[in-house]
Image (cartoon, rainbow, N blue to C red; front, side, top):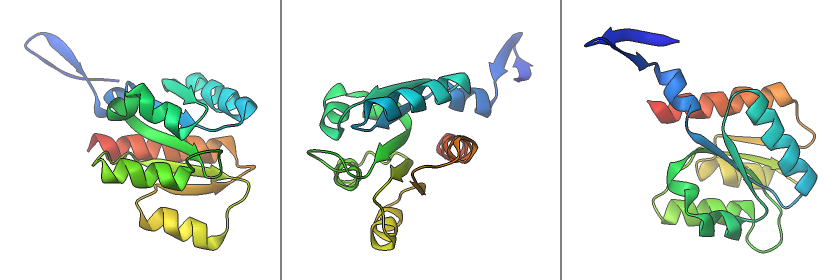
Length: 141
């Protein structure tokens, strides 16, 4: 979609601007990373995948990340620890947690710390995409 022209040039809408922002995936499971990256790219969302929280932090892309999808349980730094580190660094990224091992206490901890959503594996692809789009739209405001 294109917004009305300004001085003869067309400006992209907020949705287009949101789509141009990076969605980062942090999961130690290689198959899950690949599947999520493929799903997001098929939906027109640029995605970059990382095998650990430490790899994501070292990459330096957190400041251009508009939405983060992170596993809870990973070797080394957990998804919740990653969220705490990002919050401490004043880098608030809408985060969607995915896990096969979550419980209600963990879910509430993540949501209280600012998570956008907490999904149990296996989850519906469309539910994940809806949550990613909502996070991107909220981030663009």
